[in-house]
Image (cartoon, rainbow, N blue to C red; front, side):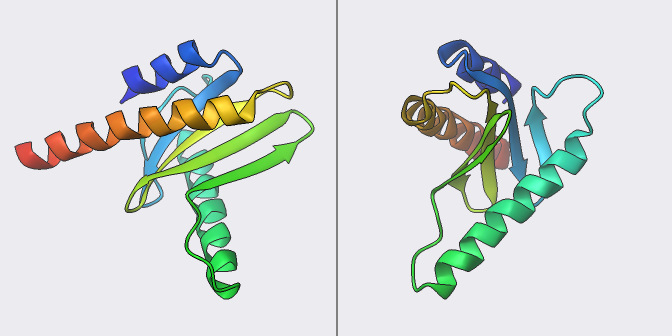
Length: 121
């Protein structure tokens, strides 16, 4: 999965870091050294769950993508499947639509890897 995150960063140079989480646990990450990936994963999981709860309260389906903007750029979240979420951290000039497209393709590859790992277990 780390390879997939690296490919995402190569395809979308605006992506500064990527994280794959499932059930609040980090499966793979390209976060900079010194960043607590478990803490980041917990925050990403909470954010995605909150977005889902908000959508359900409005009578909508759970979100496929979530975009959060701050002064340093964006945190983009994309549901891979089930509880698995792919997050990309970008700079301020990021081309969001293109990154979400690349994240969707990366998500398919991550889903394939997870299914292969389930088959081996």
